[in-house]
Length: 384
Image (cartoon, rainbow, N blue to C red; front, side, top):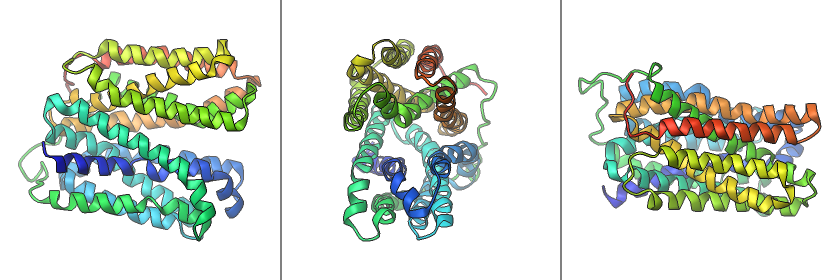
């Protein structure tokens, strides 16, 4: 495994969240500048997740026909185009560009675990997965932090701030161009495309673990500040709480491989991380004054769960083809579940006028995540 490969993987990881996370901080300005209502603003935020769910099942077939590295390079090119289109002065371009770049990111989300499975030694898969998750999280935090200041300091206001990440896209594109050489599609090499493992119990456990941990993450990012503010926290403090949640999550994703090195059976690791998430939501219900503890538990559990969810998509497959098929299944269903989470939480809050029931439901889903993670963590391979 070369340093160049690791750098190339990290550059792709840097592009998988950068163009998305800045939208939340810029949304009030986008709504004012484009005349969008809050409902349309909510759709703009949810559109990437819905696009991920619709696009992910297509990636395995496409990679079998054209090759993983070639398809990744093409996806990075499409991502650059979508990012630029989104920043053009038109509401139609805003939504069209969002769909285009989301399609490209969906391809990257599925292709990266398969390429890691093919190119990285088995004993290094979790370490490399943790590294790219850390890069993803770091760039997500950076994008969230600098997008609003950029909108106030550069010409073009929020439109320019939406486009700054294209620099990383170009860098990743250039890093992967040389890796297209010798990238033969499985179809041209006489191989057969791995079927989607719909009948595999292990595949469904990986899928549910991916979906439920994604739901917890995207719901926390969307609603945690509002929950804290309604409990008496100032908006500034709530923002810092969300930041601390992301920092703790980054630390957890970085440290997990060191703590679990050499362990192939990760049932209790996945279950324990999920219980931490459930505990974080429980603390928010039972002891709102301990919000720092709640955010710490959510960050520790969430960061570990994300690394494990992505690692399972590589390690529970017997080949890169199976990894692509499993990742497509896990991410298409997973992101559909994740997209429903913030919406359903909002509906529960509007219905009950309280955060108690929504947070209790999230805590219960944390236990369900632990059950799925315990199954997905066993040292075994899927069978279609």
